[in-house]
Image 1 (cartoon, rainbow, N blue to C red):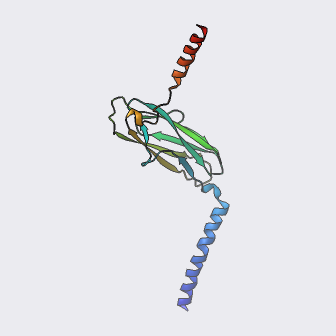
Image 2 (tube, rainbow, N blue to C red; image 1 turned 30 degrees about the vertical axis):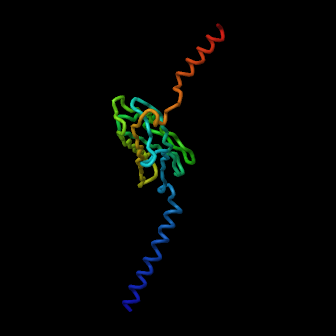
Length: 175
């Protein structure tokens, strides 16, 4: 008789836990959300820049939460700077850019490698009842200092040079 009671208690536990989880997932979806950050650079595909070069990259944040969330971004490397923020509001089903300026020092040696870490932390709104979980994610941007011809910017015309050519063309046309 005792053996059958133990078996029944174990069966009860095995049955009640999945039911409890289904109820939580059904009635409390605001407790479950996730954020994601899309990055075009990883260890095998680093951002390649020459000494003294500067570029802007964009990390895209998105959320599958049912409500807008606020995300705070924090950088840890002196070669990188957030251009907006540090707080961003991400609406459900949208993608929000976090634009980052990366500038390689003039005296950086070819072959130098930098790791730029960007932490994204959900800022809790204080809403949601007794329990509100805030989440975070950290993205890594590997940066490699290369020669000028290997740089991602090699051959791209800086924005200011177009104006110079337009002015020279107008002068030649008038002459």
